[in-house]
Amino acid sequence: MDYYLNLPYTYIIEWSDVDECFLGSIIELERNMTCGQTREEVLKNLKEALHSYITTSLEQNLNIPEPLKVKDFKGSITYRTSRERHYILAKQAKLFGKSINALIDEAIGEKLKEVAMI
Image (cartoon, rainbow, N blue to C red; front, side, top):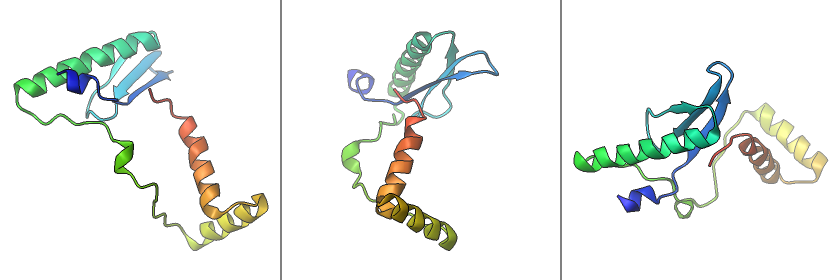
């Protein structure tokens, strides 16, 4: 139990204008979501849900998904795009004095900052 509880699961918590509360989920677990009036409340609910999930899975001898590990990735991605987008990327990279890879990596980094993960 302690092994799973101490793994670095990824918690997503964001405000929902529709529900007028914070919604949270753990990306490694399917079909899980909780809500609360504060981020702290949602995080507490998520940790309780994780504990229940692990307890039930262990009791029923079910597979428990583990978080992704940095060491499992090489850092290279094959990216395919249209000829036109490739052309635009090359022009933008030249304009900013960067390689296409550096431009794409920077753009992805900026987009990833928009997603709040705990």
